[in-house]
Length: 337
Length: 261
View: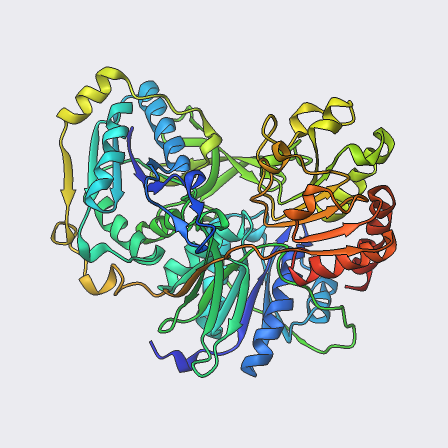
């Protein structure tokens, strides 16, 4: 394979139920940075049925130099084969050096199918992407062993260098309506045989009540919140961070939280990416249930609280006052993003 | 219905610990298990065989000690076991792995191939769909329920998404990737354990598969591990004594730095 023939970055702009998904903008954010480092263009493939011009315009404002449209009834709703055909065909024609797909339940179904069809490598669920000095190869960093090990993967002799990217990790660009870009229709004929399974029923569910063990973010409250009112405010903070509320034993015993939310030796053992402990002193039984969390933030007005010995970041202040302030700051941070 | 279940033997990652002094993984004494998503797939295959008849074959690629995972599957009730074991298969990424397993599947007859969605050591979820592509099979991934369809030629499966699910009818032959919560896998029966050591596990090498050595193993893998590292030993945290507003700002700043928000 002549890797020199391949250039540019292509992102798969995932669309469900007629809406472009958040992951598409995240891919454009990181894709833009990589394209700029390489000095090459950034294109987005937007596939579906009945795509509006406004959708393409938003992708351009989010960083794309070109939006490639494949618009066909065969692409709605999602099914593996028609989408694999669309993505593989666009890659075969355009020969991008890098192709990024979201590591969603759709992207992780589609990307391996396409990588196998093209005979190229695919790195799963990346949390870091960079261009290597000299070789200009893509450095794809991903967690393994449940996040205990990080590995940097390269795909030096095959193109495109394909990666699925973990949702929620890459930052989207600030929307810029003055950005200019091309919108190109990519003609592709689908056959009935391409829709090779039959979707009998589609059911949307509100996220089921999840287990705290599975949450990526936990906002956890303890005795220091002083009452059910203070504890109740944690839900708003958890919503803002996309996480769940958990509790120390003291908060559960006081009746502020149900038993299945209890973290600690007599409760659940958790290891979220972020554990935000509000008004929790950090008894050893509690620590045993959360010390393996990725990043621990502790808020407690008592500077001598043992929780601070385990925290990556400690704020000595009244948690009851900090929680509403933090909700406001997060909202402000999102609005400016 | 004849079913092949592709399995991986994995270290029980819930038992893997980090050495606090060196920041490296402690793997000594960590037990090996059948990957949980694969075990769910095996249980689903055994249940289908019980209602429809046929045969369940378990297949794994790995070092000679992966024999143990196959014996466990036999003890649970699988009929036959095949171990793809050859030093030349080693170091394979998902592409080379899927090519090797697809070559083995071409030597067998089956109506259905089941793979676990992903293995707990690598978490890639790629090998199943890549096998399906090599064999030109329709695939359904993230399957949490499998039922035979009345027509006898299809399955109706439940396919899970982030927020909801679909019921999908898929014609045989096809490939499914299963989630561990598809069922509660049965335990090995005592008689089954006894029988499992009486049964033969077929060991297949490169020559048995008829694949080009250049396309498999480390050599045939498009992706290479350039570097691997642990997150390392935790440094002492930073503590700030500030008012609530300032504290909130500091938290947002740090969460941004860590890419948590």
